[in-house]
Length: 124
Image (cartoon, rainbow, N blue to C red; front, side, top):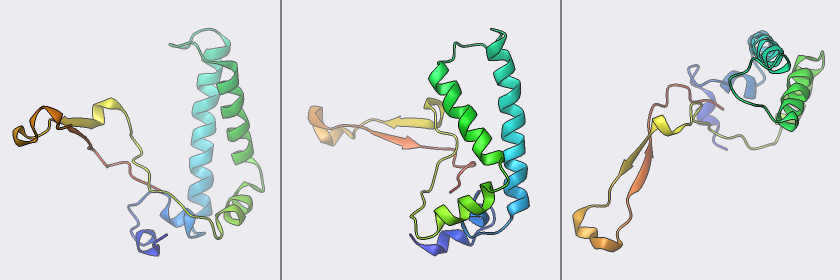
């Protein structure tokens, strides 16, 4: 993994991958937990807009709980050491894709391509 991408402060998660900004990481985890608790309440009260699989709810609940623990930051840092990281789009859905048809010279066998746009939420 190139360490060059860890420099830009605008790249979400770059400080966390570098072992910096534990307070920002905990703030993000707290926000996630609060949002999840609100949604989970709607799911439990059958007020959610969609039906949620119990397996998905269990996985999210376990993840949020693990990230809220006292050892979450040191555990994350230990797991990050020596592991590759991934650049993420951060807002991946069909509205952020454009289909580009194949050029006419490609003939009927030419395939178009899918382009990702709106990289505003990019992170590690």
